[in-house]
Amino acid sequence: MLKVNKEQEPDFLLQYKKKYNPKSWKDYNKDNIRNKIKENILVLEQEEYCPYCEKRIYTNDDGHIEHIKPRDFFPKEFQSYHNIIVSCNEKNSCGIYKKNNYDDKLINPVIDNPKKYFYYSIANGKIVPKNNDENSKEYMKANYTINILNLNSYELREARKALIDILEVYRENYEEYDEYLQFFLNDGHNFPSLIKQYMKL
Image 1 (tube, rainbow, N blue to C red):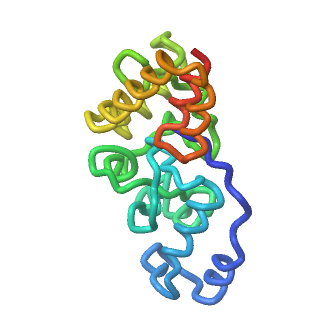
Image 2 (image 1 turned 90 degrees about the vertical axis):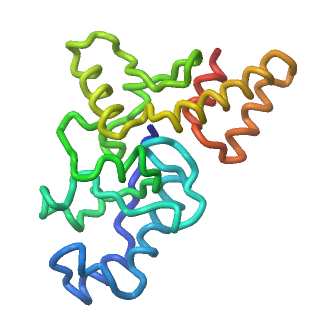
């Protein structure tokens, strides 16, 4: 998972609210507003990554606006700018998989710093809690978040394992190993937290 550093609510969104006075999310249907929101968040706040799984979201069509606190259960939060991020469109993980599920144990990438809660297993590509005390608050939050977002789906595990295999080849065969890993980061490769973790090995 990645931290999302929210900017101030953009002027175009404030103007939209003033002009149309939306009463529900269904009212965000004019002036191409949803695409404008997605593009703004993706480029300025998320560096084109899904904060949940860390895969790149290359176009607006590859992601959707995700209400961290579901609008069905938190109607006052439906247009709170700090409650929306852009999640990928993977059906077996992330925002689509989460649906309307929510609990305070969810690690909120806008509020919490995910790197305090997780690391990646180099052996199998799984994301796992940093704190292995099952009674600790940190473990419970990490475990809940992994399950509710299905961050260890088969697809995500296999993609991480494939990246680990590539990184391992570089580590075993090239003296300029750190430079190659930095290139992966600079190139916007999927799973930047995993790459950064690997750089410390």
